[in-house]
Image (cartoon, rainbow, N blue to C red; front, top):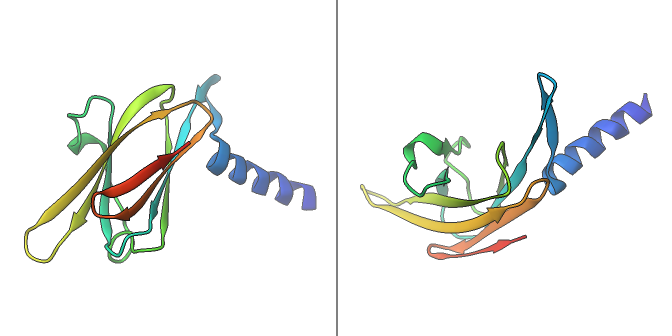
Length: 128
């Protein structure tokens, strides 16, 4: 029983840290991972990813914490595409109708994790 628990924990760790390949109908699919870290003083309300920097609406991930992604919290996303350059966008919301967005581009290598660390509005860094 302990070996099953360890296998599951190792599988989850490898999936988060090092990417993952899964099988879908006999076909092995490679993936890449994104970790969005909010080190800012603001709440992030949405994460969007796009391969063409145009289809932001189709690839929006609303971050469903009670009030978005609060400061000090991480969001994990597995992408079913890899070995590609992906455009990323986050949305901050301000009181009223003001929306502030921040964008970054990163190369997502198969079986690897990209971390996008946000330190403030307009300030962030990608780590491979």
